[in-house]
Figure (cartoon, helix red, strand yellow):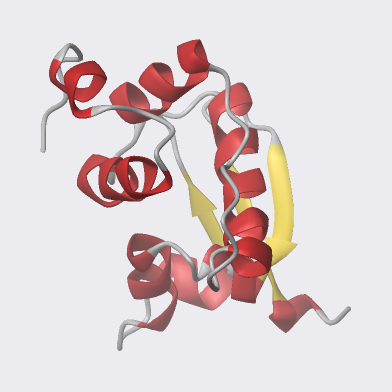
Length: 121
């Protein structure tokens, strides 16, 4: 696979996830970072750092991107995520609103669970 077909996502601990660009573009936030006009570092280098997101959570997010590409086109299947990671994922994301809506739409977290977490949007 060519380098321009991948994106490097970097966690708070410095762990690097190299994912298909198509998968990363599931996130509108990452999509905007990589396609916005101008000479942004993310676009130039194909890397996006997430200093507030732990390696465990970023790994789960990357898994979701691939799951979304495979199953979100109409198949009735849930994204496998542990409840404790669901809440931590929502709490740590810099793009909480986007992922909260995604998690709600997948049925992996209820509105009640979302309301119990202090999430700044």
